[in-house]
Length: 346
Image (cartoon, rainbow, N blue to C red; front, top):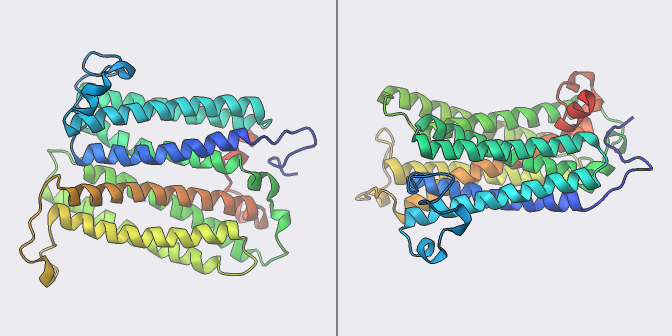
């Protein structure tokens, strides 16, 4: 029996999915602004927390904020947007417990709330203690919360209620098994890549140049792993019987990964110039790297945000693939979604 399918007494309300979608749409801009704060090194523009220069966060004078230096403007804006995301998360918890009859889904919404609270506390301690390690942790926790938001939107969608492995034709189980396995490997690899990126964004002053080069090499190798697995997923989902809800996100994923590779190359160029071991194109001759220039800011921040977007797409693909194919082969039983795990526990 499918524990996620609606029973005769279950209410399928639009509110949990609506609020979850709003939460996803609000969290992605927060990631952009957070990346902007790091790019401009504006994390310490406000020395106190949770207050802002002694004011209550929400009572800081608007005129002072709008007329403030750019680093203070984006740091305080980051705090306000993060607070809004926290309030939306609370709303998600409320509507989930009220309108969703699946008990595990209510507990999952509380996990989302715990993650956003933890992220806020880590961000605040990073300001108070001025610790680089906390800055890296903050950069690693943000994508985890974003993933939980995307998962909440998937779990509360009508497609999740109505889809099951029973919808699929009788197939050779090898291909569905490969799709589930590849999608989860891709999800894990993408998150590891973001962890590596967070370390490159917040290097320790004690690192040697050689140690930094190791992180750069690992980042490049992981990018190759992600690109290869994304192409594998395109090949595995090419058949016409694969639902569009799975095929289209895979194609979008490949487009985003391609764009991310270009953004990564661009981010390196605007931040560290052209690698000396590569032939330099003629149009780059005489180019000067300018710290915190508009070009550098937009390119590097877009690279960070695109990484989180790719992680979100991977999450959606992995959950949808598991929803459709996890029962098609016993070896895939371990690759179950969060919903199945919570239902089994609770």
